Length: 337
Image 1 (cartoon, rainbow, N blue to C red):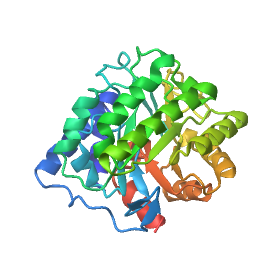
Image 2 (tube, one colour):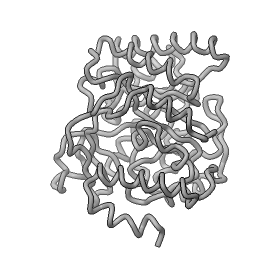
Image 3 (cartoon, one colour):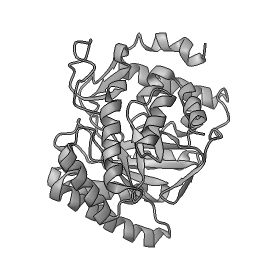
Image 4 (cartoon, rainbow, N blue to C red):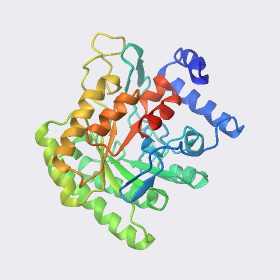
């Protein structure tokens, strides 16, 4: 039995958020005591995406390390890249607790965290102290009390601060846990946001002498017309990549389970089909012009291969780690080799 397999029953006795925090603290301590493996990517199939060389195609999704406080310890899992955040311009506590719920019978999690984070300045300080030199994605969002019509201001404020430290920057417009945020995925709101981000990136690229890719994270709940419209916007604004997908507000596969009716975004095995379908539809519209990162419901090698078959160039995991532990990363890297 793996070390995580031994401690998982203890963690599962705690509520979801307490277990999450305890696991990160334990990992941090183990890394500080040199009890984790050397922080280097697992040997796998290297891939060049968005002009970036990824040592393997398996990454950590945003949400696990919101403030970038555990990057070095998480790197010991062997990821080909790590994404931190979502971060907002100002610190905010997020939604009231309890706000994270495990559904073991479905290998799923429901969360309504609400972009709880210490603010972009704290994240920048943490990243600056990190020794990690691999590919780092930084996921940005808006504060809950910023009016939706001023959302672009928050995204651009974060963009400016994280730009010098990021391998790529992800705009999260798809969390279901910030009021009205998903309006930014469609129509004029999406066009305005993308225009602001790309204009900001051009000025930052000139100032810093490097062009950091910008990607957008979409929801799995978009219908075909909205997917097609978003894809057209990505091409129009020359977005560098798309992450498909975030959590779902649907409850397919968890109806009747304890916590299955909690508000928030559902992740894990039940979201895989919807997420992969959106991924495939995006690929049908975008082809190879815009790279895709597949995330949602990856709990084993077959799931990762399905994402690649649907058009992904890279994959990310989060909820799978809750149920499978760090060995999942090794399994996926080997499967995609």
